[in-house]
Image 1: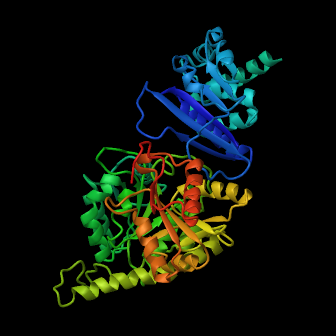
Image 2: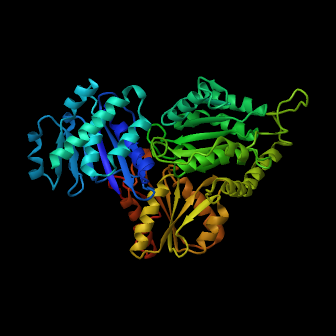
Image 3: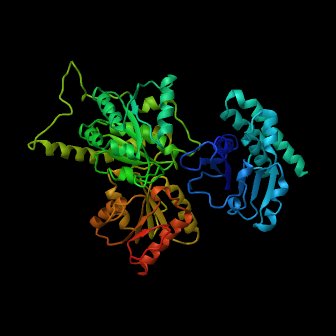
Length: 185
Length: 372
């Protein structure tokens, strides 16, 4: 099972990203996905969490994710070592960051965390004209994890997003995905 | 006819239903009301002229309906209601536990608890077939754990309208308000005949046991899924210790039972699907095969024990098997019940069997030290 925790602020689309990931895995990859927000009231701008579990077999365990394989942080103001301290050994933290050097020390201080940073805000502003980074970070997650294919992620967007914002978000998803793959070469 | 008043975490259900009524994809009246008390009253009114009715609520809203719950069951209105299980104030909490519905176990409604989204949907369909059966004519409360089921996204099969219509034809009843055939409904009765009405309610609930099984079987023939009546056993065949569950926590317990079985433990779980009518026979029979039964309660009757435990113990007492029983109070106010917590419950049971644990009741993951 792959367990992913998303961090964002209310209104940034963290839960939408977790839901699209779960739907893409379930509908287009023949896998089983479970997606849920942090339970409770939600307020715009307040820190929120969202969760995705993906497995080859039906997921019946609905308990909280205790040690995620991946943590995706949509908003750099939420990036702290404390927030990622429960990550699985060799798990990956993916941060939307404009200055990745800020987090270089994490890999020394913390447990064996693999850090991936990506400037999703600049990309989102360029394409969507809005600092909504969830689909960019979904693209980064797909490239880094290989949990689902890019094609399934695009289909997930088509099935879950309104027509007016679909094209821009597909572009953001694809560009983030290919940029990460280029960087990894 | 749908009538409901919004309350977290039920809100998504009535919002979506109102959209479906608005866009015509669901042919129903949607009656907006100012409270849960009125929502259920409206359902009774519509049901009394033979309409199929639905409402949904949660927690404080369910309690606000309490007076009408008894009215609806006493009036034998086959209403189906979804309840999003949520904690009760005070302290104020919108998170999930099962104190709301379990505190209303005696209101005369059939109570069913779902484990996942598929069972939730399937049981809405089955609930009408059960409630409207002329031998039953008793309202059904379908309980979904708040957030764990109401706010979790997962894949499920949605049956076609045609198949559902074939399974569930329009509600026909001779017991309705009708100008051509006037009847007295929802009346008062004195000491001379009141008790007979109460016996009939009890008898109808007992008769529902066979109807529940039959409905599940005919549902299986049409849709290929079945849930097994009042309970579902999981890996109980050679089990020595069994954990009794209610609702979505069953899924996490399945994983732990699988893990422990692989490690050589003889453990199983019994998922109670219906709290009313209660699976007395199934639990008596289980108690003849196992050495210890633990009951998870996401509720507590203060000053005594969990309500599910009280009911399970009563059945086991009638079987006179004298096996060990233990109560695990967990998940109150939305506290997570982890796989580790469930392992701990099995450890308590094992220690109980060895005579090392004398307390029959444990608070799991309480986070404060207590000395009992």
